[in-house]
Structure formats: C-alpha cells, structure tokens
Amino acid sequence: MNDRASLGRLGMTLFLVSLGMLFASGLLAIMIVRWQTDTWAPAGWSGPPAGLWVSTLVILAASVTVQRALGAARRGERLAVERALVLTLLAGIGFLLLQALNWLAFHRAGGFSATTLLGFSFYVLTGLHGLHVVGGLVSLGVVLRGLRRPRPGRDPVVPVMLSAMYWHFLDAAWLVMFAVIVFGF
Image (cartoon, rainbow, N blue to C red; front, side, top):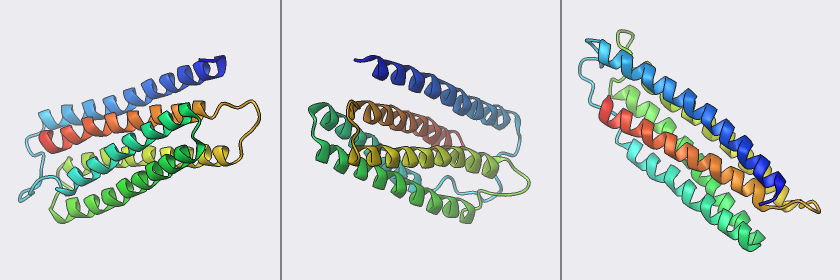
C-alpha cells in the first residue's frame, strides 16, 4: 500500500471512529431514557414498521456492491467498478426512499406522540443515519466522477477503498440501530 492509501485509510479510520462515538452516544442516551421512563410508547402503538427489514436488506446490498467495486478496482476493471458503484448508489437511494416510507408507517402506527420519547428517538436515530447515507451518496458521486476523468498518477483503488470503508461502517451502524429499534423499542 502506498503512502497516499495509508494516509487515506488512517484518515477514514479516525473519521469512522468519531462517527461511531456519535452513534454510540446517541444510542446510549436513548437506551438510558428508555430504561428510566415509565411510559416509553404511546398507548396503542403496534411496534416498528415491518418495512425496516426491507430497508435493512437494501443497505446490506450496498455493502455487497461496494465490495464488488473494490475487488474490480484492485483488478483494474474500470467498467465493472463504475457499474458496481452505480448499483451502490441506487441501493443507497432505495434505502432512503424506504426509510421515508418507514417514517410514514411509524407515524401512522401511532409511534409519535407529544407525551413519549419513542417517536423522537426513532426519528433522531434513523434521521442521523439517513444524513450519513446522503453523505455516502455524495462521496460515491465524487468517486464516480473521478473514475470517469482519471488523472495521471492517481490510483483509482484508493477512493473506492475509502468509499467501501464508509459504506461498511454505515451498514454496521444501521445493524446496531436496527437491533435497538426492532428489539429494544
């Protein structure tokens, strides 16, 4: 691995550690409030939206496709990299659209009320993650643009590797939040 790749990996690792602390502190705060409150969910609440399972599969698909892009980048297969990154981009957009539907389903199921923190917690957790997915989509767009306009001396593997690190982190963070939402709420 060259110096640029090593530096990029270090920078991304530090960034992901800081994001991990942000997500962990948010989850911990919500769990503390959950354990200390007598009325967590509004009366008649039927549980988290079943669509969360589908959106989970879609975000996991993004990890699969970005990993394929990384493998193709390492083999020097530029067209395969672009295709896999476009699929990752589509999976990310699909995840966000499904999350919007989940927000509506959550509200319709009675999950939000002014007297409990359940709705606030759900929207903050999923909204925070959704904002980071948007950031991942922007970075994928930048990487795709760079692949289509290659610069001499630039290794195309590095940006794909950094994107893969970020998307795998988003998946891991989502799986933890998903478990908390589905089994802890």
